[in-house]
Each structure stands twice: as structure tokens, then as C-alpha cells.
Length: 228
Image 1 (spheres, one colour):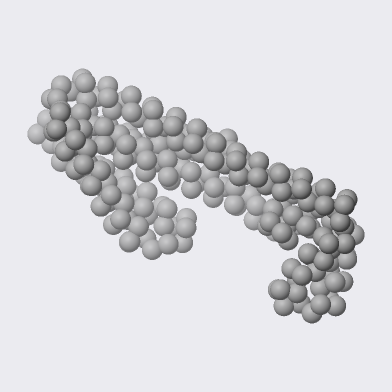
Image 2 (tube, rainbow, N blue to C red):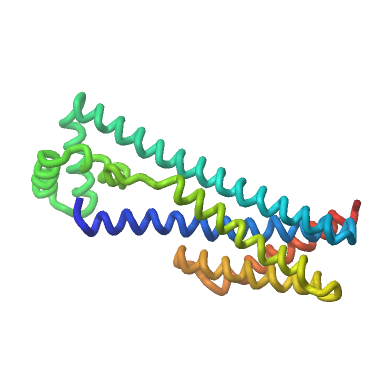
């Protein structure tokens, strides 16, 4: 495998962990602030509010981590299954596999004759790596790491949830609600900024969208707490 390909795959793996971290942070913020406001609306007892927030912080962090682990594990298993399938096909229908590689380069704009030469050369050197890269964009032996995604999600969800939890727990009574709302808005705006940067999206739109979602989350949960 070339150094460029290795660098690309390593970058993809790092970006996957970062993506999991950003999503985990956003979920940690929203779930914790939701619980804090629903409980705070139902009871003025600060100890009850704090315990509910802490419990939800841990629950959210481990839930996000397990979800990311399961998701990325499924992706990795699918990639490995595709590799195993292509390995069998190389033994049972090698000519068709060569044709698939040839067709790939023809679609890319290479002349049929040149595409055939490229396919023959690649398939004579490393047929399995060539086929899975052409058919599935998989680099042999490089699969997404579920543990990296799970750990990134675990810690980021916990760190994200700390913003509203600390605001609600330690701000003076007169500023608890407005301070927690402000802390939440800043935190979700930051995750919106990071997600847009990672995904090459519209930064301003992502930040505004996240802030609106955060404020709606607070309003809905506060309303639910008031019902009880």
C-alpha cells in the first residue's frame, strides 16, 4: 500500500473518531440540559436536580459510546464480509473479477485497451486488494476502529454535558436558569461549528441550527416538567 493511501485511510479513521466525538458532545449537552430543566421545573430541590443531571450525564455518555461501538463494528463487519466474498470470487471466477477492474478504469475515462493492461497488471500483483478497492473503496487490512469511536463518544458526551450541569449546579440561584441556557447555547454553537468544519458545511447555518435545537430542547423539557 502506498504512503498516500495509508495517509488517506488514517485520516478517515481520525475523522471518524472526531465525528463520533462531536456527535457525542452535542447529545451530552442536549440530554443533560433537557433532564436538568424538566426536573428543575418539577421541583426546586437542588440536590434532586444535581443527582438527576449527574445520572443522566453518565447514562448519556455510556449510551453514546455503546451506540458508536455497535454502529462502527457493524460497518467494520460489513467491510470484512465484502473482502471474504471477493476472496471466494477470485477463486471461482477470476476472469469476471478482472473484467470488473477493467470496467472500473473504463468508466474513469481510460481506453478499453489501456484499462485491460492496468487491470492485468494490478491483478497479477495483488488481486484481492485491487478488487476490494475498486468495488468497495476498501483498503485491505484497514477497517474503522469501533473502540476509537466509542471512547471519543464516551468522553465527549461527558464533557459536553458538564457545561449545563455546572451552570445549573454552581451559578447563583437568581442566574441558574438564564446561565444554564447561555452555557447550553455556547456549547451547542461550538459543536455546530466543529461539525460544519469537519463536514465542510456551512458554519453559520450549522451553529444557528444547533442553537435553535438547544433552545427548543430546553423549552420542551421545561414544559414537560411543569406538567408534573
